[in-house]
Length: 442
Image (tube, rainbow, N blue to C red; front, side, top):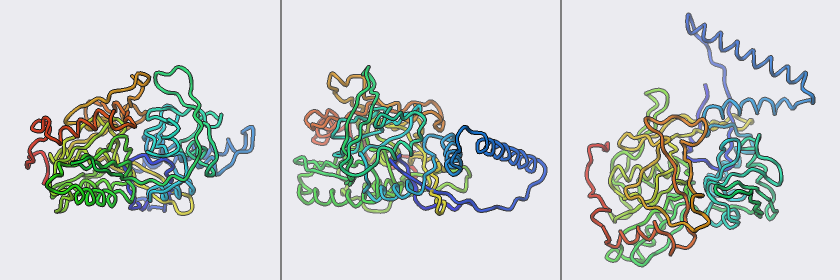
C-alpha cells in the first residue's frame, strides 16, 4: 500500500514536488471484482502497447524516463487541478518552501487553460516589485511558449541563478496587448507574518502558511498587546487577502490562537473512517479582544479554514469579498528516490459542516475595494469554480471575486473600514455576540 507522509497541504505552493513508491498488494478477487481487475489489466496492457510503439516508431528517440514521468503526471493532473507529480528536485524545492525560504520570483501559481495563472504575488518579492498582479496569465517565459508545459516545468523555467533576469509575457484581463515584464531572480525569504501598530489597533498580515506562521502570529500579537496596552487596545485586524494557503497544521494553529474550544476543521476522505476532526485547546492569545479577518478572491485554502472556523464560532467578523473556494486537502506521498506525488485525499469542512469547495467563504460584511481607473474590471479571480477539472461543489458553485489590495494603506478601503469598525463605528452590527451556536460542534 502507499504510505502517506504527514505533510498535508491546503494551498498551491509554487514549485512543490513529491515522489511516490508503490509496493505490491495481494489480490483476493472473485466474480465481479475479478472482472473489474481483468479490465484494469487490459487497460494497463494498452498503456504498455502505446509506450512500446512510441519507443520504436516516434520520429526521434524518446527519453523513456521522461515518457513515464509525463504519463504519471498526466494521470494525476486529470484528477483535479491540485494533484500532480513532483520530480526529486521539485520535491526538495517544496520542502524548502514550506520551511519559508526558496529561490525564485515570488509568485504563487496554478494552471488554467494550459497557461500559468498567478494566484498572487508574494509581498516584497521581485515579482511584486515588478508589477505582477493576481489573475495575470503567463503565456511566455523568456520567449518560450508556456502552452504545453506542466506547472512544474513552467516553474522550473522561472527559476535560475540569483541576480539573473527573466522576461515573462503576461495576458491581463482588460488589456488587449501582451505585457512583457522583466524580473530579476532572487532568494525568496518569506516572512509569512508581518505586523504593525495602528495607534489602538494591532494589524497582522499573513501572506502564507509555512512552518513559521503560528510562531510569527504569536510573537506579533504578544508584542503589540504589550506595547499598546490592554486598556487602550481596541482589537486586531488579521489580513488574509491574497493568501493562497499552505500547511494544514498551521491553519489549525492560527485558528486555535483565537479560540478556547470547539471544532476548527474536519477533513473527510473517500471512506467514512478517514474522517478527522481538529479541535481548539484552551487559550486565546488576544484575551477575547475583537477580531476582524480580511479576505478576498485571492484568499484560498488554509486562509479559508481560518476564516471559516472563526466565522462559524462567531469569534471574528469576516470582511472583504468572497474567497477563492479551494476546499480540498493534498497529501504529499514520497516515492523514494523518484520524487513524490501531491494527491488530493480529502475535502475539508468548517465547524458547521459546510464545504467551501468551489463556493468560497462569504464575508459577514462585503466591502469592495476602490480601484484605480486602469484596473477597473481587471482584478477579479474566477476562483476554484473557474478551474478546469475541479472537484464539484455540494450545491451551486460560485467562488472567487475581487483580489486587489492597494500598496498605500490610506487607499485601502477594506482595511480602513475594519479600523473604523474596531473603533466603534457600526460596532453593534459588525460584531455578532459570541454564542454557543447549535450549528457549531463543540
